[in-house]
Structure formats: C-alpha cells, structure tokens
Image (cartoon, rainbow, N blue to C red):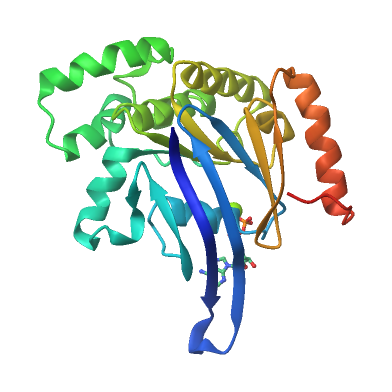
Length: 255
Ligand SMILES: Nc1ncnc2c1ncn2[C@@H]1O[C@H](COP(=O)(O)OP(=O)(O)O)[C@@H](O)[C@H]1O
Ligand SMILES: [Mg+2]
C-alpha cells in the first residue's frame, strides 16, 4: 500500500519585495510504500528541508501535491493542521527540540496531552516504549541532565508515542557522536522492522546505508534512487558513496 505520494511538487520562494525568485524544488515526484525506510540525500541547498516542511504540511508547495494515506494535504483546513500533524506524523530533528523545563517523561507525553488522552492511557503507552528505547531510567530527569544520544532516544519516543503513520526525521544523527549514531540507527532499524514507515533526510552515508531505499535530490529534482534489496549495510554504503561522487562531479546518472 502506498502511504505517501509526492506529485510534481514545485516550490518557488519569493524573496522580500518579490525581486528575486529561488526555485528550491523544481519537480519532485516519488512514492513511499507503507513500511518502507527511505533516506533522502542531497547537497546543502538542494531542497531537502523545503521538501520535509512541505511533507509535514508546515509549508505549501507552489504547485503539485502531497497525499498522505489518501488525504491530500492542501485540502486540510488551517485550523485542523496542528492536530493532523500530531495524529499522523512523528518528527525527529537534529537538535532534538525537547523542552528543558519539562521532564523527559512530560516531553514524551506532550503530544498525547495535547490530544486530550487520559493519564492511565498515557501510562499504558509510555512504559513499553521507554523500555524498548532503553530510557526507562531517565523519565524523571530533565533533558539537560542526559546525554545527546539519550536526548535523541527521548525525542524518538515522543515521535512514536502517537503511533504515527510516518516518521519524518531531519538529520537525526547530525548532533550525535559515533556511538550514539550507531545506537540511533539500530533503533530506527528495529522500529522499521516492526512496520513503522520512516523518511529521513541525512548528509550521512552511514545513516543512509541503513535505509531500504535512498533518494538523491539535486537541483530541486529526484536525480537517482538506490534500493537496498538484499544488500548489506556495507555494500549499500559503497553504492551510496559512488553515487554521491557522481552527483558532485555531474556524472551521467538519471532517476
Ligand atoms: N524561506 C526561504 N526563502 C527564500 N529562499 C529559501 C528559503 N528557504 C530555503 N531557501 C532556498 O531554497 C534552496 C533550498 O533550501 P533548503 O531546502 O534549505 O535546502 P537543504 O535543506 O537541502 O540544504 C536554497 O537555495 C535556499 O537558499
Ligand atoms: Mg536542510
């Protein structure tokens, strides 16, 4: 089943006074099937964050459309967008985006609190997730009392607590050391293994090598994609590296 459809998405930014146009996305189309783990790579300025913002309904495309689980994002009324995001999407950012004056537990539960869940329902969801992510001992602490890798696991718990259709991650390993990176990538692999669909933007070839498919964007278009198939992470790593070299030297690959 197709979970996400991106159809001919174009995004033009008008700079102040409309004097300059920046074409951040030219014509982006792709689909993500239910249960896939997709990484998106591209050089700085290639439109990755623009694309994620559009997928998250935080920004609107100039033309084209995005359909999540049958629902066209541009038909959702403004006043329903926040709850739509909360109920359908989970976000993981490079900088964690945790609230420092909330305990880790309250950070994780925030999306449920905002949706009006009862305390016992929240607790029922929290403990199994906290155990799975190895953060059960950190729940009463505050974000500033734990390491970067632990913060990111707390952010992943917050993203998962609502059982979202899709996890959107923007450079989730960007602020982590190599050990925490490995632990986060293993975690993403495990949650994908139990059916969670993940779309991750990353600069990191290592991170992308864990995904089941890698899309490369260049000059605002999907330039190429690689399916992992039965390949190991190491083989996938080498293929991604080759593709990035071709991309940066303007080699002759096409999607
Ligand atoms: N709000 C904005 N206004 C004008 N130009 C923007 C804005 N956001 C991004 N851009 C431009 O759009 C292009 C793509 O940016 P971005 O999506 O941030 O790329 P990436 O995340 O791949 O580095 C860049 O040329 C950037 O300068
Ligand atoms: Mg970016």
